[in-house]
Image 1 (cartoon, helix red, strand yellow):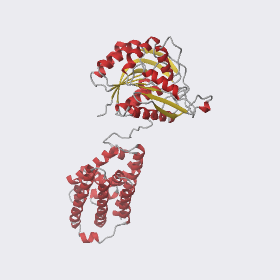
Image 2 (cartoon, one colour):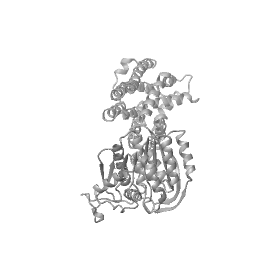
Image 3 (cartoon, helix red, strand yellow):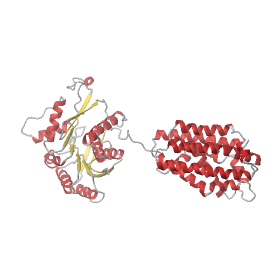
Image 4 (cartoon, one colour):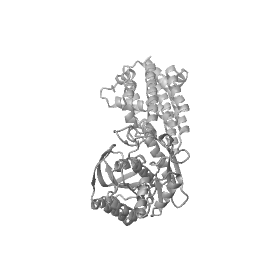
Length: 509
């Protein structure tokens, strides 16, 4: 079972681009569950940090314990810790509760230059938290700050200008205790030849380095000249945390998280006047309906309501309800309806063939069996209106019947299984909807109405069971579609509904 409970211990960003707000967006976009312990409130926007209100470390402890002792935590991800005492609280909690995986983002200075971790807390971070880290994710300035603080009497580390220098810095940080170190090279873009650029035009690649028990892993992405990089560090660490929680190896998690951030920058929209946020949801989408509510959503759409009403409230249906439909027209309808059922059975047989799992195959097959039973009943029903099976089968399909059924079969051939279900739906759902409405309407004529048995036929248990099976199939597969695909399927439903209405028109001739 994948671990999906992630506790984020970090500061809040009032502008939503970094900190806890960004962390939760990333974790949610990965389908994981985020909990938070807030270490500080910040007043900030895309232009900079205007104020910091540090949460007392004792209260941070209470937040952490509340999550760990109830919901439980599989992975801890840290960001801005704000004080030495809070660093100690986090380290103590990781040890006390045996948290198996920890992603430590050593947030020290904001992009705009604000100090987010006091100098006196850097040593505590190095001595108490880094040795517990599964992976620590510093950018180059943070890594240099850690190393310079650790070796306060030595010469300051120079800014790296080669991949070799990046590897050396990452390995030096790893000597302080973490199992892995991801050194983020976004602050020092390189040329195509991995040398220091002398101009903006020569900035071509960003190199991230992952060092761990094995050989260093070099990850290269194209340099993007964008002002929308606010919160990239927080977001990358949370993407790594989410992917580790979902069962990826460290190398897989880091590589794919890098691509996630690269796409987030590339697809970002300008917000604010300064360094804007990335797009956290570039690979996520929200369907326009809740699970189990696809059909309800479909029938309530503005572009569906008109065609659906024309189908379900057609003049032919009204004449069925009041018993005024001329017998000849009803006989004509019965003949074409039988011929339609032949093709409808073929379409559902095709659906069973195209289904990908046994449950869907069986459900489609049950609908076919129901249609066969319905055809047998249909023949007996027709006899009551002076039509024999030979009479029915001697007639040719009306053009409207042919057009409708061949459209459905064409969808079955050219589209996927679910598209075929959607094309069949106006008939399956429509008859059930019409019959139920007429049955429940006290204005519908019962006594002396030759068509009342038609209504009873489509509210009977066997037909309602078939409708329920078809609806369950649609709901099951609707949630697997993308929003763009849903729009394509809606167009198929509308077209099939209009052709169903044409079937009523044919019966009115």
